[in-house]
Image (cartoon, rainbow, N blue to C red; front, top):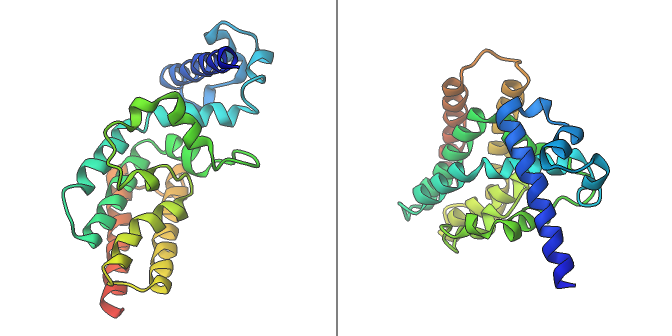
Amino acid sequence: MEKKNIKKRRMWTYFIDATEELIQTEGFDHVTIRKVAEKAGYNSATIYNYFDELSHLLFFASLKFLRPYVETVTTEMEKTDNPVEKYLIAWECFSEYSFKIPEIFNAVFLMDLGDRPENMLERYYELYPSDLVTIPEELLPGLLERSITDRGRFAINFIVQEGLLDKDAAEELNELTNLVWQGMFSNFLNNRNHYTVDEAQQRTMKYIREIVDQKITSN
């Protein structure tokens, strides 16, 4: 059984690494199962022994591009004990990197991955445990969430614990800030506005800060 698991992990890394290389060299939209198989030195049918569909390969490979984001957000959030600032920093980093590499963030956080995507982040970190080494234990649960809503709940819980918001107000704040980011991100990703990366990020954070200030003040 152990040999079988070792082989499975090895094959996974072959195909994930090949997908990562194709994203870098040919672009996200040009990755296909056939190209991944050729790059890894196998046939297309072999891939389906390990991955259900192309979106899963794109998901796992995209996570490798998130390392700078993960390092930045953990470092910055550790710099303050203020729960509101922690929450805003989490959004600042998330919005900054999402507009810089929108295809990657779409693949990781929004793309349809089929019936059971909730355990895929954990499966990735089982393959690449070194990516978790620098993450403080306090922040680890939130970073292991794929759901934007659940990640937001984790970050906003620091504010709830300080008594600055009750749970109902926190849930509303979480939903509102998620809607702001998703609306701006969707328009940006699909070329429905003419904002630059910086403009999209700055407008998103302007609206999020206004919503946070209003909720905290009125609570």
